[in-house]
Length: 141
Image (tube, rainbow, N blue to C red; front, side, top):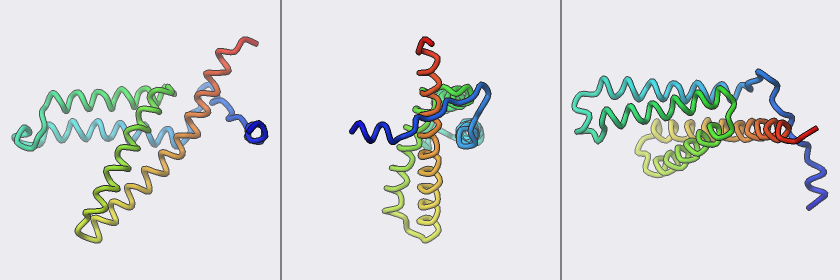
């Protein structure tokens, strides 16, 4: 067990204004989702008939905007929260793949699972680098 820990390199902390590409992709996805929720709530007529509400859409868009802002500021909790949403999306899309009735729907599910899984994996490394920087700031020199 100790040999495994010695063999692994510690992640390098993020520099002062460094934002890896995967983090910027996650921020953009989250911000676009927030905007999409707002546009959807404003353009769908009789939203309650479709199981939604304007206050619910505002809350969801606000939460997604808050996550996007937190990720842009390189906050660990925000990246972790977005990864939880990605994990849920991957599971839900995997279940949708089981009941896909067309090749196009199945292809869209596979594409969504693949892209979400890639982003999830890339954000794991970013989280390690954020956490390494937080540890470095807490440790007295």
